[in-house]
Image (cartoon, rainbow, N blue to C red; front, side, top):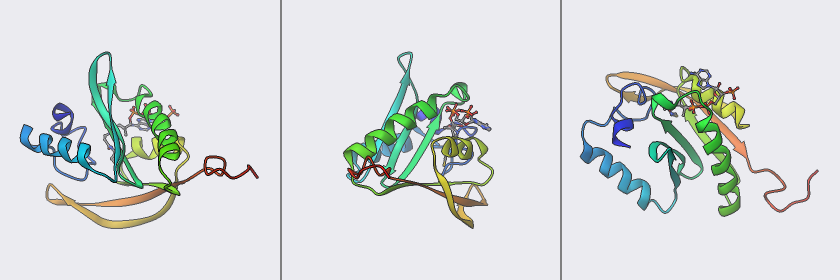
Length: 151
Ligand SMILES: CC(C)(COP(=O)(O)OP(=O)(O)OC[C@H]1O[C@@H](n2cnc3c(N)ncnc32)[C@H](O)[C@@H]1OP(=O)(O)O)[C@@H](O)C(=O)NCCC(=O)NCCS
């Protein structure tokens, strides 16, 4: 994960600067594993770690893949499985996401997963000496998954 979290290209729209050292990534990993309100997953392909996806802090989801694995459907495949798992194992009524307006890959991915935009805000993150904005997305729990009959 440190290879990915220290990569400026992968981290361009992340909520922190690229990790400067292995200790920062170790802390990140420990907090990911230790969070009682999270359900995050490391993604492996061909025996190698290629990224992570999931709810780092319910109900908010997040994902990051190694750039050499972008555009191959891995994030969509992972998130579809994870969303089903989150409906089955938690009672959260919705999942949310917070994405920079210029992060076209994440916006497309969220739209493909069924998320819809709820609102926008400017200057929500100050990272690396500049301000970034947010588009907020939500995905409601399907009625069937909540145990109610389909309409
Ligand atoms: C966002 C990210 C995880 C997407 O991973 P990915 O495996 O490349 O995504 P997928 O291949 O599953 O693509 C999902 C959809 O988005 C589209 N997409 C992917 N990259 C795109 C891009 N750069 N521009 C436009 N659309 C894109 C795909 O075409 C696909 O749609 P399709 O099914 O119609 O073909 C990856 O780009 C990434 O790690 N980005 C950096 C980290 C980041 O910004 N995380 C989010 C912070 S909120």
